[in-house]
Length: 167
Image 1 (tube, rainbow, N blue to C red):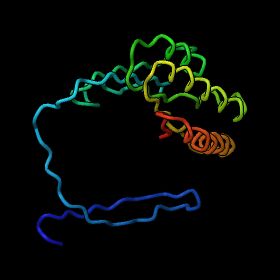
Image 2 (cartoon, one colour):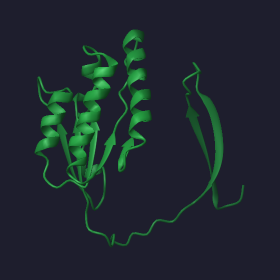
Image 3 (cartoon, helix red, strand yellow):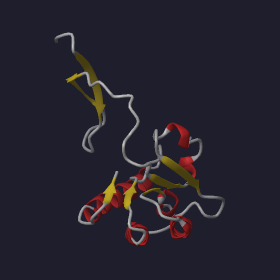
Image 4 (cartoon, helix red, strand yellow):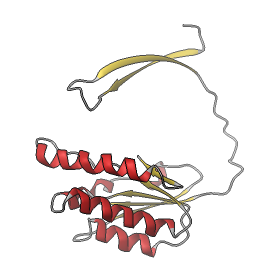
């Protein structure tokens, strides 16, 4: 390893493993310019259920306008997210992190369908759409199986849509 290289270690957990596998890679240092960005600020709208509590938009993207919409009581579901997305004004990016409350009471098929409808609604705003994977819960294997089912179906169906990203 020469003086311009740093060593990074990553812990990765694949779907078929119980323990993370450790990989090490070398990466060259990259210098980052402190010059102002030449492109105009982008408007990023983040729509989240309670997982968005505590997010600080000022710490997210420098030179970008970021608005975080944490859905309120009774609205922390896909119906509430749909209402919120419909009300957005001229976003360039819509990031959605909602659906884990829905999967607890609805079928995976119904949840995927609602998320797809939400994507269509957001695409009408002429923006890119970023759908966050649903998060698993500790010690709730039946719930987690449903979450994995939804995440797998979403990543498969959304990959064919233009300007839509499953994260």
